[in-house]
Amino acid sequence: MLHTARRKAAGVFRTLGSLLPGRGKRARRTTRVLRPWWRDSHQSYPTIGLTPARLMSYLQAADAGAPQMQFELFSEMLQKWPRLAAVENTRRLALTGLDWELRPATSVVGGAGNDVAQAAADYCQEVLGGLGRFRQALSHLANAIGYGVAVAELVWESGRLVDIVPVPYTRLCADPREPWRIRVLTEDDGARGVALDEQPVKWIVHQPRAVPGRPFEGGLLRASALLYLAQNLSFKEWLIYSQMAGMPLRVAQFEPGTAEAEKQNLVRMLEALGTDAVAACSKSVDLKFIEPARHQGPYEALQNYCNTEVTILWLGQHLTTDIRSSGSRAAAEVHDRVREDLLVHDIAEEAATIERDLLTPLVRARFGPQAPVPSFGRALIQAVDTKVLAETLAVAVDHLGLEVPRSWLYRALGVPEPEPGAPVLTRRGSQ
Image (tube, rainbow, N blue to C red; front, top):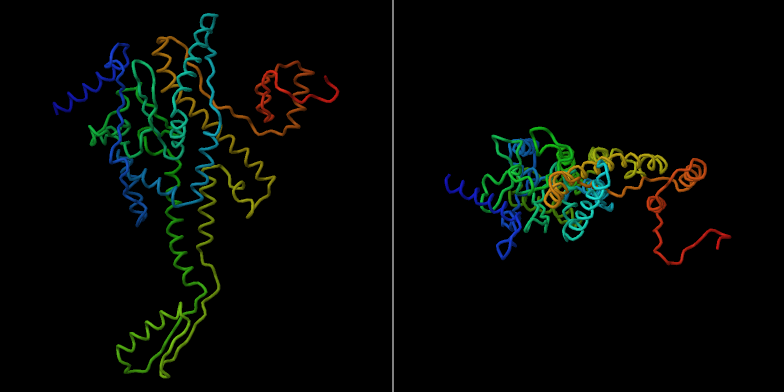
């Protein structure tokens, strides 16, 4: 116990020391907690032999602070269910595919305050733009939509952010006595881990649908687990059924007193009829073929049900993925706009996390505790009819005198803004 306490205290002092300016080799030392670990590549394959009781045990273990099997289950679900992987990609890439931007804080009043706000935004833009893995970190944080939580480590060197390291899901846990506190397992402490709230400037913790007291419960993949179980079990049965579908049942009747060896040979002959289609048997054997009934069984209907429900769960609708089976393109376009509501929500949740756990420590370390923190956002352009937009702008600008930013208009129309001096097309009749 004493050795553990000293080791933790030494780690805290190392972290604090790295944030202070200094000279020499010691001042350039980084404070990275996560190191490559063999346990990161360990796999338990929880979907093998998955049953309702076993699924419940994984979820209960996660609620008790040990979510490793739940997270491995989620990973395998995405690998084994194509529809789930497709809708998860659609929801996540709709967020990460947008360009990110920083805007200076607008709550400050006065010229000096505006100058500091702009300087803070420019500094954060410079630091984040220089991080080679920042986009990778944003993609990792977007996984929280499905997993419920995503954590990344901030690596500081002499008071400057130098890297952001995604935390593998196998590293996350919680103390059973304090299940609301997320911890990260390290090679030095592989049993209990490091509590994230003890080093708030070291971690980005993204929880879009946080459940109070249960940090590993809010993801959409957890809500998809029961559908995956039904889909997986019925798919296995469907594969077995497909091996027998269309093949006649082979029945051979033999005379009483037939030798046991001849019976065994007859059984092997019936099994071979499934592929060889030829057989040789004595006249005393009565060989019959019984044609199976022509029906698909409940498997296809259950598969379609699971695919539809998981699509609605992730996207809020299903017509954009099932136009061929139901609905029309016009209805699908209406439903596609419902997905923008989910995207706006994902953008707002991401921005709140980035501003709290990343931009605030950056600004505080450089400009002090009172400096305004810039806002993080995504360049979201709502899907609009360009003809309707042009008519609206004509009324807004020509008749109402509203000022419309040129950069926003170019993005809304999907037209790149021309470089100074570049040849451009102009309206007919203009010079």
